[in-house]
Length: 222
Image 1 (tube, rainbow, N blue to C red):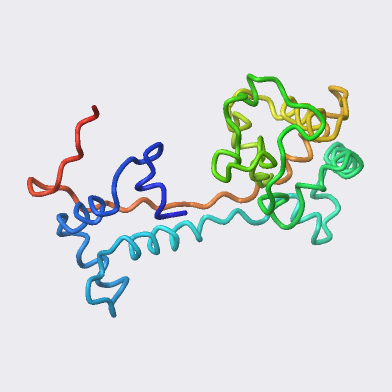
Image 2 (image 1 turned 180 degrees about the vertical axis):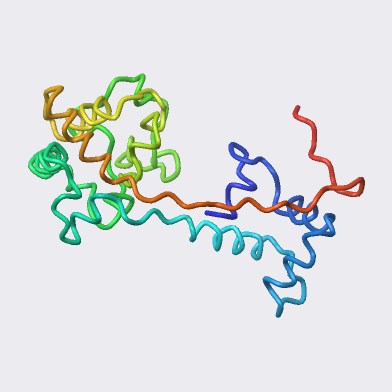
């Protein structure tokens, strides 16, 4: 995951060779890579760059959410409305997909089990995993996202068409479960989901080694 986006044409649109060439052309990176990978004959490789990125990403944990404190026995960590939202979340069957420590992120499911959502939300041209596997059974199948910190990550869905969390809840209830939630119940579930916001990591941004005249320039856009 750390290595792939660098060369993905719809993400960074670089090449692994060019990325390594750029790192090697910036003198400031040499001691950093040598320190991080002291046993490597050539410490600046795409594999080591990916390992370094992954090591940093592993520090981006968000513990101590109100829901975590509630699970640990602090009954006051959730408000009465959040507890009602949790009960609705359970009773409506949301945990069929959003389960485990991350409340999701561990399975692939069809978006639109009962009915396909509006095309504005699910563009029909986006076939999901079918585009990769070619299997008709994978049409509109996507990875179930984690609900951790979901209140901080709008807009929602891969189309970015929905901005309110309670509206996203109603879309999911209708398309996945066939349930028409009231505005009040959708808001209660959204209030519960806000309890999944954990303590955010504090990142001290380093001063990165500067490029120089010898640093390869990116190819101009066509």
